[in-house]
Length: 373
Image: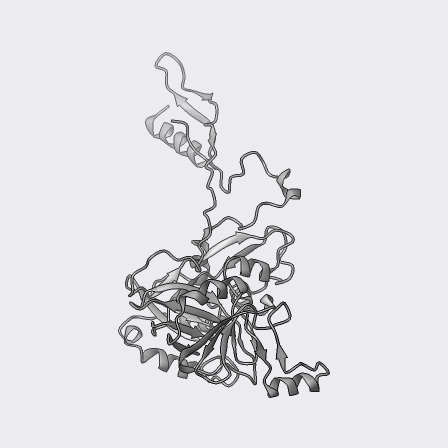
């Protein structure tokens, strides 16, 4: 057999992934001899422990984005509110990041995105309440982020006001003196309220309250934690009970408070521009149907004006409003490719007992055949 024919035969074997090799013999005709396939080496990739934005490691004061996106697999009894609270997230954040996933019954094995990466606000002093993203950012005196918490904010007709404020007072086991306007609303709905609600499980302020010098507005806990991360209050800001308990002792009276409503944010990391968009509140004129205005506002940012931007990608991110930072520079990854690079992390709860027997002794996430050495 000629050299060229042998080469073609080898190439054909490779393309067809046949488990054969050529064994030339000067005394014999060239023959094909079958060989054993290489053993498969199982590569076990252990899911990482999830990051917790309530327990941040030290980070530079000039950081523009915090955290990382994460995937987990839902258990059959999970709901998105359950998963949200386990990871320091709010209800709306989870819904926006997981379009098409049933919030009350995601289903066994459903891949759930944890929106634990976010652009930091430009204002970095004391407490910054970002009502568009339903998050509280807590900065130290040097402007370094200490932690960030999901918050519930004012619903339509009772919007949380924006602007500058200070912490006026603090109270553990607060008494709620029910405003007349709220008593009138509840009375009209057939649910009369007393003038005063003392400490305990029926107090909607929860176990801690931080009063602002904006009359009538508080940052407090709640006896209805599933409302955290939503627009549900009469203007006050609600935190999960465990989060307000953590924050309360570390916020002094007199601390500055900034309340922002900025549904669109831009950040730069390693020369790459990222865009984060949240659904607007009613009345906002910076959304679907107003693209030219949105684009004009973005171009007022010198970081945007000086870069080549993939405007179709930017528009898609704004209209999807998933609430996560995604790249918009020309030649950057598209949304799907960016999400495919997100790490899979361990569930915060143990595997349910009924699933333990279904798992193999070693449960790899990825198995790849690898040639024997």
